[in-house]
Image (cartoon, rainbow, N blue to C red; front, top):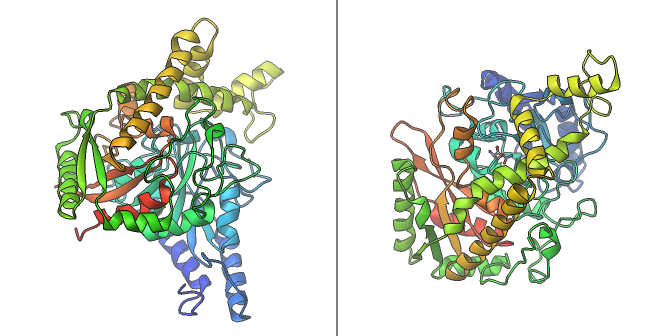
Length: 492
Ligand code: GLN
C-alpha cells in the first residue's frame, strides 16, 4: 500500500531487493536474478500509479520464485542439470495470479533438484546457507525461498511442499511457511514431484501477509482438476463435496467445527476457547529438548489465554514416513519419466543411438537422490512387489487420513514440532539418505492426509538457531489456521 500512496516507488523497492540479493550472493539463494524484467515491470507499475490507474493488491511488491515454477522469465531448472537450457513456454497459474496483482519476481530460488530433499544440498548448483548460521543447512527443498525472506531480501517467496519443503525450511530460518490444504492452490505450471501430495504455498514474515497471498492464489483452476472451489475467499460453499481431490485414497472431507475457513468464525475462534491437540507420540527423546520446551512454552501461553490443551494419541502416524517414502518415489518415478533429453533442456553429448541418448541424458542430468527415488519408485510399482509395497502404503495412507479425522473431532487444531531438530550442519546428513528422510517424520503425515500446516516461528535455541512449530488444521481450515496463529505470537 505504501506504493499506491506514493510513499515509495516500485522501482525503488525492486532496486533495493536486487541490491540485497547481490549483497547476500555467497548464501547461494538465487539460481537466476530477473534484473531487467523486474525493473521493467516496476517502471510500468509506477507509470500506472502516476496516471492514476488502479493497481493490484500486491503492486510493486518484490518476491522470490522457487525455481520449479514455470514462467518465461529465466530458465526453469528445478535446480537440476537435466532442465538447464529450458525456458518455459507457459506461466504457472499461481505466478500469473500474483503478477496480475502487481507482484514483481526479482529472482528464482535454489532448491534440492526436483524438490527431492530436506536441506537444499541436493541442488545441482550447490547448497544454500542457513540465514542464521552459515555452517548449517537452509532446510529444504525450498531452502532458497526461505532464506530470501529470512534475510529480508523480499517480502515473500513461493514454495512447494510435498512432504515438508515449505514448513521445514521456514522453521530452520525463523519465518512463516504455509502448506495449504491439498487442492487449494493450483499446481498447473509447477514441476511435478508427487502429484497426490504436492502443494503450492508461501513464505512470509507475518500471518497477515500469508492471508493476503492465499486470498490471491487460492481457487479453482480449470487447468488443474484437483483444485477445490474457492473456499478460502468464499465461506458459503465450504461444505461442498471435494472428495474427487483425494481419489487416490478415497478420503472424504468430514464436517468439523472449524473446517469452513470463514473469517467471522476464525475471529470468533480466537475470542473463545479453542482446543489444541498435542500428539503424544511426538513427545519423545528423539526430538530435540529445546524444541520440546518451545512446544510446552506455547501450550502454557495458549492455556493462559483460555484455550484448552488436549492430548492426542495418533498411533497410525508411525506408518507415515514409510508410506510417504513408498508413495512419493512411485509418483516421482512416473513424473520424471518425461525427461528424456528430447523434449526439455539438457541432452547428453554421448547419444550415438536413441537408447544411449535417453540413458546417458538421464544418468548425467539427474542428481543421485533423483535416481534413488526413480529406482525405489519403479521397484515398489513393479508387478512382483506392488501388493507388498505400494498397495500396503496406500492402505496406511487411508489409516492416516482417518486418524486426522478422528483427531479433529477431539480438537480444533494440532500443534507439533515441524522437525525433530533445528538446522543441522552442512554435510552432516547428505550422504546418509535414511538419516535425511528421518528429519521428515513430523511433516509428511500432513501431505498424506491433505491437511494444512503453518510453520510459526517459536523462538531460538541457546545457540541462536530458529525453532519452528507447526499448527495443523482440518482440510479447508487454512484461513482460520492463519488467523489463529496470531494467538501464538509474543514478543520474543
Ligand atoms: N523432504 C521431503 C522429501 O525429500 C519433502 C520434499 C518436498 O516437500 N518437496 O521428500
